[in-house]
Length: 473
Ligand SMILES: C[S@@+](CC[C@H](N)C(=O)[O-])C[C@H]1O[C@@H](n2cnc3c(N)ncnc32)[C@H](O)[C@@H]1O
Image 1 (cartoon, rainbow, N blue to C red):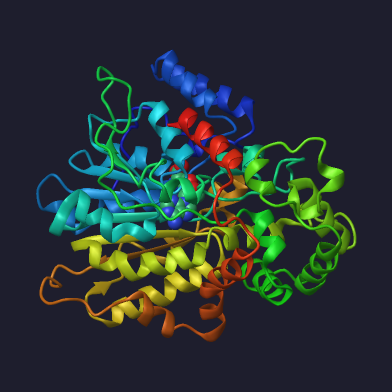
Image 2: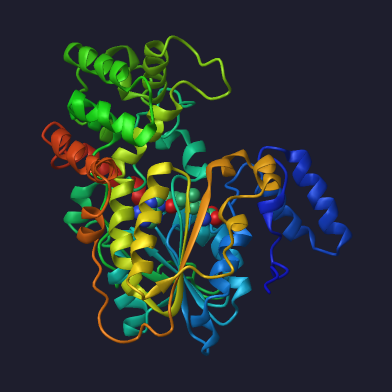
């Protein structure tokens, strides 16, 4: 049996709606009644409006019960999608003998966790990397031993959606339509001016507040080359239509792709717009094509869809999701992770994946089925059908959880001998044709758009990027 430990900081996952200050204050009163101090309560209230971890207890329980953890101390658990550190925080307090490696592709997520001071006595390590680089990180962090568990909570975080300057949201205004998880400019990474991926232990409170204090032992983090605006400028109409269908289930994919195709010959994106004008692009909107800014693109999709949606869902929701997945090649990275993560696990180690998208879930399900067929992996008994979806209670408190699915897999203890014959290529080749196309479509779109996107940063863009990144880390 597993019971969530009493968290050292209050668990915000079960507070009422994320925007409800009343809910937080009510919870703060609840905390006071139980003798929690004002600082801890302040953190609960401050967390209002931030990311609420989905299926927190189910996912953490799945990893905390991994048989690999039974054998002694010093194991490493990996949170492949650190975000605001909700799952990591509970992992650290649930498994007091393990270290946690938190990975995120977005440097600002790492920075936020750093600023929160969640160091857990030196047991938390951070890496700026994609989880697609898991194999390299394993070599750097725990050598041949392998990880005792890996968690991936896929998709975008509320912080990313809510930060208008990141250009993720149809609720945004005149900000550039960016949508990259990692906004570092690739030419800076290539030139070594902005780090290779870094792995670092978080400093203790009495140590100098510099992070990372052990830099550059990780692999380099592949940065998304093009912003959403640049991608939409260069991708062919056919690929865009297919992407909107496969990644967004958008019924009006052909009309939306057709409209972009027609307009873009009239009003092309100024060269390097999205890099140079990241953030607000005030005063420029008239001269810009509609997909250059968040509001412009949302209005275009809305107009093509016959006006504002009559349901609670914005008419551009599916399109924005599809474009975000395209920009960040989310299915491609997931396929690579599924090709590498199984070999990174110690015997008795577990993988836990939370998906929010039917394509992602189908990919994870297909990989897990094939891994079970190798005889090296099994579906652990603790994970019943009841645990694979969020409870109605959770969905009522956090509507973002409604499409979540949790899948868990365990490497058997008897799987110590011989290499596992398993690769991304085999996995992708075994997928149904539609899913295979979906996995490869972002790479195709990036190639099509690459000729018209930025190949190397102009001096202005480099300077902006460098200044911005210096402020961040
Ligand atoms: C849903 S949030 C995770 C929230 C986190 N579990 C929490 O409790 O706060 C997803 C995070 O994964 C990150 N991400 C997305 N794709 C990634 C990848 N390929 N590698 C590493 N991080 C990724 C995003 O930047 C985002 O911060």
